[in-house]
Length: 437
Ligand code: URA
Image (cartoon, rainbow, N blue to C red):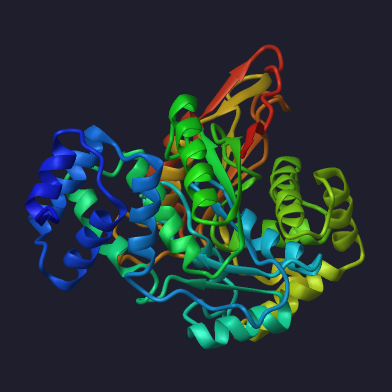
């Protein structure tokens, strides 16, 4: 005889394994109102302590995925591949990556998020482009992916609605940190895009969601196993997020920097992150036999201007001012500049990404509540990255604000984010590991 919903909760509480059908029943009962919020909260706490095995996690992912609609991109030829980052400071990779990979023939349907907490969000950065719309209908989204190769929108109401409600409960029941719950949350939303493959950028370090390498590795491992069991091609790359990625933190300035990458410029770490993730996407998409060949293809798409042309078409299709793509300096950044200077000579040895991210939020570049608006024009530019030499009194960072006094309350925090040493620190490789099955 079938177990009742309360018996299912008790089974997980006691460390038992749930049948796939039971996990599905929990989620459908939750979405149709038969299972109350407090019962779901009890389930989440039971999972927090007892975990879910891979079969249970696939069942949870699929139940959450099918709580909403799944995009059908069957009419778009080719293997559709997306990238998801667990979030970091200065992480604007999606903005240059999606058009670049699309220019190489792999369609990239990308549903992104907004900034929350100390990390920024792709949608906020893209909306710094005048007119750019991220609230397209799913029909327009599919059409643009088909015509141009990529489209970047926000989560619609019908993408994994169960995740939204469950996430809200996790937030207030101290259960956000559970790895199986994170995996089901991330994958349910990504699989709703109608993708065939997914490259995950799992960030590790002070500025990341996962501060510690062991937990980041456990998360990456489970994302790969569960995503693969769900029938997708999945690769995870562990990348370092101790210092901000690139030199810009904000919105308009980050979009500028991402566009610079498509012009063959941009800071080395941002270019590297884009190429490493892009190469995996081309291999999953069947456009290169290995990552070496894929990297050459990506570089060629930058050099030929093909990637820029895709970006221009995508921006125009989404209502944005496409002129900013050719001329990123058209993107408005705040006019008042407050400089942060080095107190000593030597080398910058470290920059605390968390402190920089929090300063960005305090300046209005990010938000602490989902309903807040961000100021696209404010931000921080890093003039000296870890490993770079500096003289006493030289500028290490610049704060872009609307009025000089707006920098007063963040100046100390930004200055304090920099550490110095007499000798250059040993270089810390951006890529820590690659995981696949
Ligand atoms: N991002 C998500 O989408 N869900 C989580 O649970 C954590 C990070």
